[in-house]
Image (tube, rainbow, N blue to C red; front, side, top):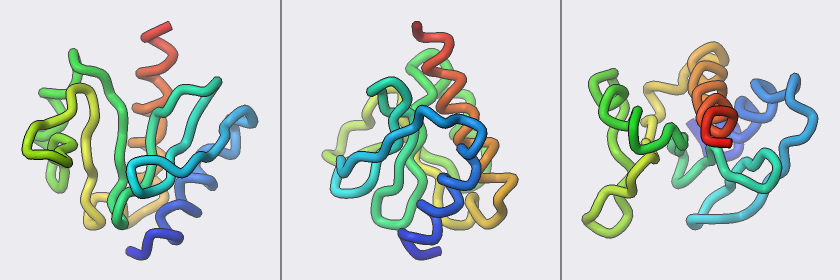
Length: 106
């Protein structure tokens, strides 16, 4: 899935959240709520912030792995491969997990 197509799916999934902003980060596009990043697109993959305490439970799902730019995983962040973002429902589920993390972190 192309970078922009995934970004559009994220935008569509967030229509019920009017306070979302976008910012170029990590060499991609980040989505923020109240100035805090909860998901994004990097090289055509979905980046989701789930927090360190929940990070270990999701890589068991297909097409999910810890975020790793430098050879060292970034705690609390996951990449969801293109195959895991094929439907709007799948993207919405991941986007909501990122927003849920922010709601619980506050």
